[in-house]
Length: 333
Image (cartoon, rainbow, N blue to C red; front, side, top):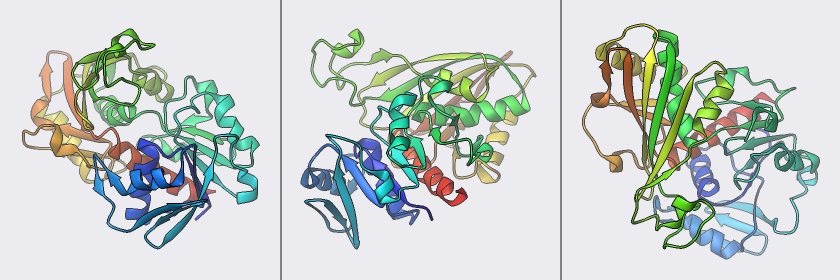
């Protein structure tokens, strides 16, 4: 296992570490952020969405103690850590700022051998590849891919659906809408925000928003004709995306759902994709590690139009893939 560092210890960074430790994927050689150790340790120990960590957690100057693990902590408020001196092979970038090449490149300039970005790069020029587990991770080239984007939680939810429908029925075009839990980009109270619609209280409104998932999907399938939008809703985590596709070949509900069942049970999407046979609400999928959970009763076919609903825990599911991909990349060199 190569040496992995976590840079940015917010919502995704903390859940990423929980997943990595729970599943014995890796222990980071360092964690870096701009806040103090005691506060970050407390936020890791007690999480509103995912409850209390079962081991003792403590923060002190330069260290986060989690159970038996003593993880060095670096305050990066003034500059990035010296990755070369730490002999870091892979930085998992969880600040949300490395979506442009210049920000991601700074980690390489500081001595990291590779950067895994937890977010959608603004363009293909801003990363070397967009790689998703179960979709195209087998295309990883250790010599060429130094800045890798994991895209967004919504992209990870939609990609398995797009992959399976493309391979079996073809896609002429598509439109999606994601009903997404509120995030830190919004406000708790009514106040002027950069995006006008975000000016209203996140926990009291349904707020239309943009989604970069369509662009990220086109980074993987450049001929894909798809667009979409998001609606932010007053839930703390747990989202659902509805994808409406015009297929090239006719299909039935039974055929489509059987393909999802099969892909969830075996093959490259096993562990990434799952299915729900019964009728549920969003609480069912909170804490679920899958990227895309198909609600089979909501699959519909009307003429050429196929409608598929995919649930996803926008924090836990995404953090799980991020941890798994980091571990796999570190094994490949």
